[in-house]
Image 1 (cartoon, rainbow, N blue to C red):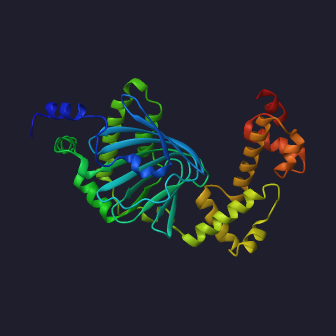
Image 2: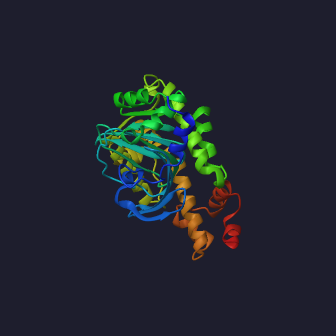
Image 3: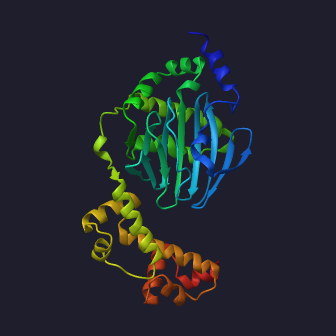
Length: 334
């Protein structure tokens, strides 16, 4: 092997953003609106009819990028073509991420989960059912990894060929929240800015070592796929309840209206949105109330009625439970 110190120097002195080849930004589609560059990274603002988002992209090593995602939108890219030789690794810090494969398979990530996705054969898109998602994406373009980088990875016991072959065998894999995953990613949100670029490189090496030892043949039943029909039905139920937020429906009434069994409805809704139906709607109502209180145009009683609380005292109790103070006091403080 060549002098490892020279190899490391060559890698670390490589341009931060290559002029050609694959870029993680390509995966975000037409929602990318604006770019801001600084010395260590590039930031992009995303916007479409479903909301807004922001991403910050770091080129960690040749062929490897790390992206911070802050999404307040339902989706960022509806159409994504297969990209041979590239894998996408996602860590969900907050919120909910829907991963769609082809046209008929959907599964969901929650806080702390890690997914490994090959973009080799099938189109793959991600959306955010709750319009709230914070997480980290790592992309590996195997064709973009230089000879020098491969030698460094070998020196550190990273088996890049094994990772590539395993990703080709299984299009999608989820590692549920664990201490190992938490250790790798959580500190990327607390690291000091002056050492962030170097720290990202260290953490990416930890991730590659974990993937080298990962057994892709275990844990396949640890997550559930939902059919397109199930997903569409639950989305309709969600939208119906949001559009009729001041009204109250029982599980039985909703199941009958949308032609689905109550058990399947409850299980699918929790799988997609992360919480039971009534918990989700309660939180959604209170979020609307918080927004209306900030606007200051309506009284507390009017807001309570607008979101379906006929008893203002029950509204006050629910708001206190969610935000820690009564709505009247919250309205005075904003």
